[in-house]
Amino acid sequence: MGWLTALLSGLLFGVGLMVSGMANPAKVLGFLDIAGRWDPSLAFVMAGAIAVGTIAFLFAKRRKKSLLGLPMQVPASTDVTLRLVLGSAVFGVGWGLAGFCPGPALVALGAGFPKAWGFVAAMLGGMVVFECLERAKLGRHQA
Image (cartoon, rainbow, N blue to C red; front, side, top):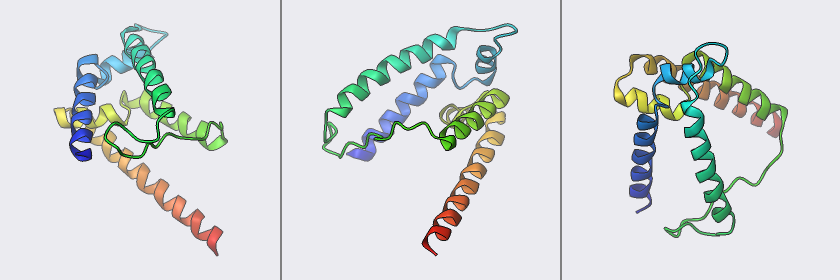
């Protein structure tokens, strides 16, 4: 049952990204172009997502299990570290250059946007590099 709920949630999320314009890199870049022809419409999408997410996290923090009976996995750390700041900066630069972030890039890939192929390939490459660095770091600490 968990996989079906995940599939339906992912489909709903993808449809929401398409309808809101978040999977359209031109719309995203228009939103990020505050010195040019700024398109503020995505600010309303983000505000709505933050509101829904805040309410969901308030309920999730109080629960031990999800509505499906699965264990709740809510991040416990609220520390702002150099690693978090640098990762956020890299994310922001990639978003600003390509007009994609990971979720919308996958939706755009499925919708047939050619630009999404390059972004998703670079994203997967970055994940591989990160994983290799993490394993190397873990290996140094265990030696």
